[in-house]
Amino acid sequence: MDINLPSERKSLIKFLGLYIFLTLIILALASVMYYKFEKDVMLYAHLPKLQEDAKEVIHRLKAMHESLLEDNFYPRYSTFKSAIYDADYVKIFSLLDTDSINFKNFLYKQGRFIYFIKEPELYYLGAKYVVIQIPDDERWLVQVKKNLLIFGGLFLLFMAILGYFLVKQFLRPMKDSLILLNNFIKDTTHELNTPVSTILANIETIDTQSLDTKVAKKLSRIDIAARTISTIYKDLTYLLMHEKLPSHIENIDMNELLAQRIQYFKTLADSKRIKISFLQSPCFLRADKQKIARLVDNLLSNAIKYNKVGGTIKIKTFQNGFYIEDSGIGIPPDKQKEIFERYKRLTSSEGGFGIGLHIVMMIAKEFGLAIKIDSRLNQYTRITVTWQK
Amino acid sequence: MAKIVLQLFLALSLFGADVFVQKCVHCHTSRHLPLKPIFFDYLLYYSSERGVKAAMLRNLTHPDPKHLLIKKNPFKHHFKEATLKKALDIYWDKYKVIGKIR
Image (cartoon, rainbow over all chains, first blue to last red; front, side, top):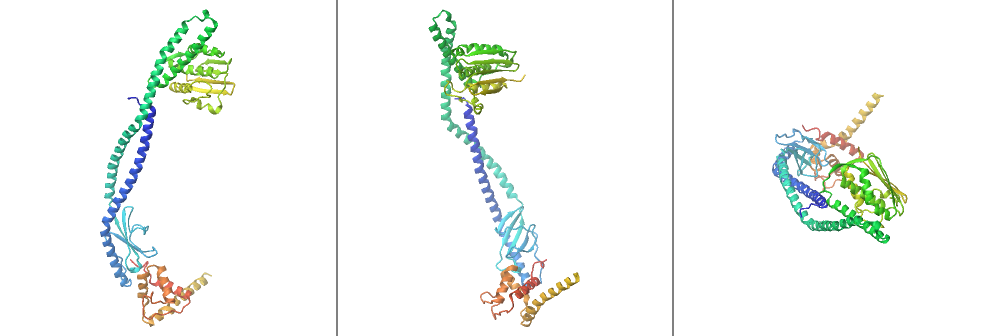
């Protein structure tokens, strides 16, 4: 149960990402509501004083009006500033720091000031709106920001922890199924290895020259089948265990390795009367030999599998690379990028799981190898593997 | 040329001023109805230039006791509307409070 599947990790990250995103949206909405609430509380706390201020200004305006503006000195106060506007929002007189007044709200905050708009019962000096402005020290805002930071942070942390445990619970059945499947494949492949190796080892010890042709042919088929199972076993083992397989880097003589693998697939190639030609030039690669053997095996296996009966396979090594070219069905240009994807198969007429080229790509990535495909439909496919010096 | 334009402008300005003085001031003075308190009364109820002028025009041309600020002795002014408007403009400019508060 301690296995952390990559898919599980991915799902966990995706779910947590979405969860945190939604939590942040909720948090943002709650923060806005809290900010507005606190702002309203602050504004209404100032309201009685503002009303008193407005009353004083109106009282003075009344006196000015009754004197028919013979007394034209507008009242000034140290604690607040004021202005008067007519019914068409035209400024009559103003001591305010701004001319931009929001007449839709009777009490609001703008910048670092609080504004209150009072409509007198009678429009002394034509003033329908008396605007009072007081400064806002914004101490409440500092407190709001502090609370949002502390409580918002705590809420986010709590939700993240909760989300982590929730997603673990949701993913448990899927994880259990995947572990069961993984274990099943591992056990099956492990159990397959011993009998397949035994079959192959015993076939090699039989002297086919001394056998009857029919028996020798049947034995050859058994050999091919056993080698195919062995290749599948190795591929599956690589797929399941590649993260836990350490790489033993060594200087590989690619001519020697390719020759070995050609020999290994000889029986399979002979069964389709495929001729393999191998042109050698000095070619060395620093990598893990077992993994490069898997890469070569998969390329060779495909070259045989998708070749026509009586076809050819050309293998050539050169400095910093090699290619394997078959005379098979070819790969359409639109499919050339897809074939490296896991479980992607060019045709369903041939056997296999569609994991071969995926393994090739994984190994190539690990050792920084470049893979190039040249292909023409029903003529040939050449896969070139190159590397830096 | 500039002299002629200036003279015309002054003539027109004086003519405009005459409309208000001749048609309004003389009559109101003789009836002991000073214009300034009336103006401030309108300001008290109609606030803006647009509101005051519209209310004055309505009450002067079609006096209705329901709308009049001075209910007794409603008096219909028999002026052309254009003349009345011109007189009201001068009246507004003369007594408006904008620019007179300090």
